[in-house]
Image 1 (cartoon, rainbow, N blue to C red):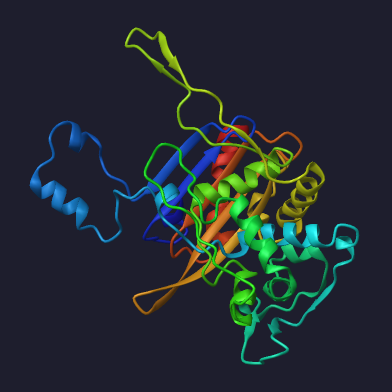
Image 2 (cartoon, one colour; image 1 turned 90 degrees about the horizontal axis):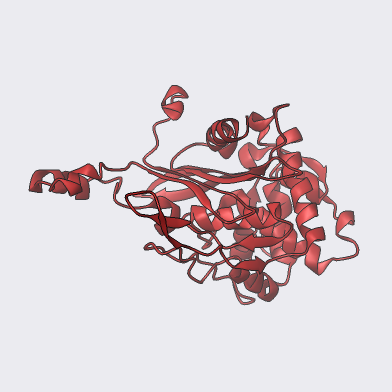
Length: 334
């Protein structure tokens, strides 16, 4: 209803939220969905045919079994890799954005900033805040690809992120031998890179929790019909994905996205949000569309909720996904 009020009619969307301190999944919505009561009462063949022939796949849990280009949300991992390769001087990073980055070895390889916007001279923080494609296409062409591959796999690319439900693994196939255009596209979360909304949520949950991911879980306990707990599920495993200083730097970058960047829809005096928007282009049936992303957490100093929002064919993350995240934060934190 929120999206329809904005004049946006997506083919699909997903929203998943977690407590970054415990890994407990607090909400998981995939749209369009179906009425489970149809199955409990005995679904008719006509009802079944209507569900399985729906081109928008209502039986598919988009949070864990749909793969999407991460778009600009991947710039957080690119920034992390840059920091690790330049531990003493990453604060000195400077790039002059002219609205596009052209491969010096092949002018045919060009990456444009959104709508050709010229960001001027940016450092790592402002490049994240303004989501400067040119800066990250440059970084993608310069960093150690083998190290980036290892980093991506730490964040569940090319391996399963299982929570006990059918899921798919994210994909990252960049190598040192990859062509320059693919390295540039990978730098902005495009190319052949794919992830699930839950996987993207794990990334920001680790940033929120001082660099440690608490593996996500969907069950805490089972109760009898009398209300007695008969089984308790353990807390998810703690996995250190980055140092606290690295997470602090990324957290500050994400705060700037809200205060002076692409996620201004999340500005509020009630709490401080840290986030990253993304607008990932995909081609389906010969038509180019843009999927809208937002990933983030709040409050900044004591994160209690981390969210991942994906809207298929949803224009930009700032216009479409961020306002949906705002609804979640308002509901949970106010």
